[in-house]
Length: 279
Image (spheres, one colour):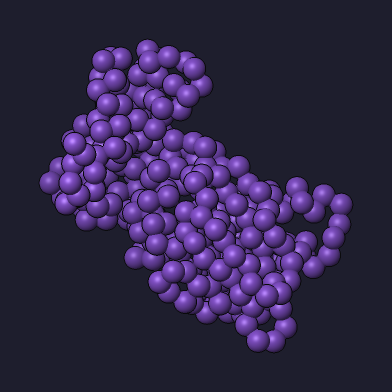
């Protein structure tokens, strides 16, 4: 039996668009102001040491290291005393339906030292370091491609270390749950029941439901529902209409999709818990 690909369908469902923000020596302070897009900012520290400060924490990192933070995070990156470190900073905008699930795993920024990284990351770091050191033809395009590879290598690094990640990355580190999660991403419109997903995981219905909630903080049905709704919203945004969007996302009818969209709008516009309702 072939090995399960825990990331293929999920990365494909991110549809990342990559832009290099900076590449080279870090001299002084680089501020990062919050942006409204769905995505991450990846900062790779190639050599030297940096200080990364948010509104509620300060971290010091020694190269090689990476910082993955949601675009909505306010932060600043500063060089420490000594030779300015070399860094690569990339913006990854996620335009696919899996963006919500993956971004939820980065509600808190992920800071990792890569001293114990695998061969894939070591080779990638060497390539990026070489491109940052000198300007050559095609440098910008190569670094953008490297940013996409860095995302995959980073996700691999996290799911290979149980307990390191959170959300869907934490669950993917469990091979049993990974089978069910990958199945949902590969065929989101399929009529998945709790029993079918538990069977994919090789677990009892009760054990699967409990393990999924413990790792993900939500039920399998809620996770699948969010994924399907994201797929439907993207079809609608492309002007394909409710009927086609409902079929692509696995809704039984346009009425079922309309109800799901209405519930989502209600959640987004509801006042925070404990806040007075508007008159």
